[in-house]
Image 1 (cartoon, rainbow, N blue to C red):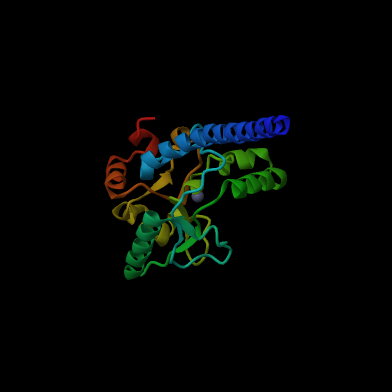
Image 2: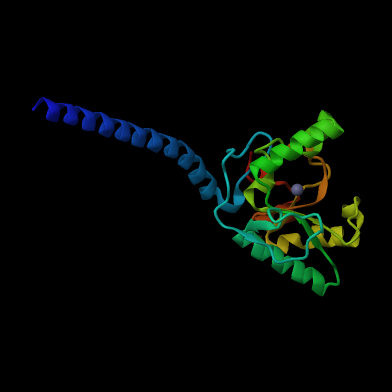
Length: 223
Ligand SMILES: [Zn+2]
C-alpha cells in the first residue's frame, strides 16, 4: 500500500511537470504566433523599416528559388523570395528581356542571421556610420520579408539608376507589383539612402497607386 502511494506521488509529479511544460510551451507559441499572425495578415503590404522591425525568428513559410539570372555572388539563400513575389519577378525579368533589357538578381531573401553578420562585418570594416546609412539593423531589412530583390545589370553599375536597365526598372516595375522602395529625395521618410536597385513587391494594385502618386510605402500605409 505504502509503495503504491509512492508510485502515485511520483506519477503525479511527472504529470505535473509535463503539464506545466506544455503550458509554458503554449504561452511561448502564443507570443510568437501573434506576431506571425500579424505579419501574415498584412501580407504583401507589411511595413518593415528602422521603426518597424521583424521578429528575430521570422522566416516566411513559402520561400522559393527565383528562376532568373543572378549575379555570380548570389548565395542560395539570396536567390529566394516568397512564391507570389518570385513569380512576379520572373514575369518582370521576361518583360525586360523582350525590351532588350538584361537584368540580374543580386539578393532577395536575407535571414536575420545573415543580416546580423553583414551589419557586424560592415561596422568593423567600413565604420559604424556606413552600416548605419546603408545596412539595415538586423530585423529591419525588407530582405527578411522575402518580398524584396536587389537588381543589377551585367556591368554591376554602381550608378544603376542612371543606366538604361535602372531606368527601365523604375518606369516598369509597378506593372508587375514592384516599387522602387527607397527613391531619391525620400530619405527622411524611408530612413534609407537612395537605392535604385532595391525593388519591393507590394502587389499590382498598391504598386500602381504608389507609382502614380509618387509616394513611398510609409505614406501609402499612412505611417
Ligand atoms: Zn536591398
